[in-house]
Length: 122
Image (cartoon, rainbow, N blue to C red; front, side, top):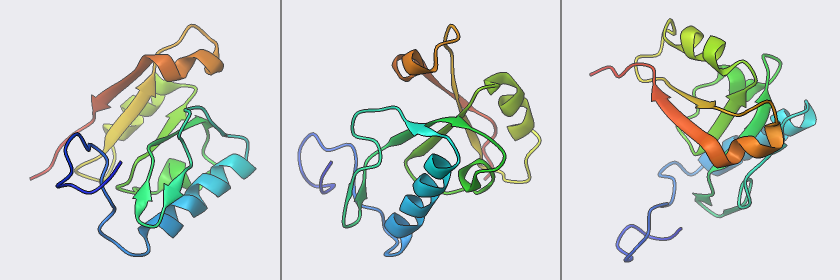
C-alpha cells in the first residue's frame, strides 16, 4: 500500500474523502451480523488507504451484500454460484462477483479466491 508513484505499490489511496468511513461502516455491519474478516490485513486502514478485506460468509441481511461499494471489500457468499447467477441479472452494468471455491471449510477459502466478471458496461 502506498502512493501511486512509489515503486512496487499496487494498493493506492481512495479518491473520495468519505469512502474509508463508508467502507468501515460496511465492514462493521457485516461483522456484527456474523461475517468474519478472513484475510490477514483485512479491515485495516490508514487515512485514505484501505486494505483489501475478504468478508465471509456474507448474507442478505448485510449492507455489503446489496450495496455496490467500488472499494476493496470482497463479500463472499456461501452459495457463490447462486450469487454469481444473481449478479448476472443485476441492474449495475459494472458488477463483479467475487466468489470462493472451497471444499466446505470457510476457514480455508481465503487461499482459493476466484474473481469472475459478471458484466462490464461502457
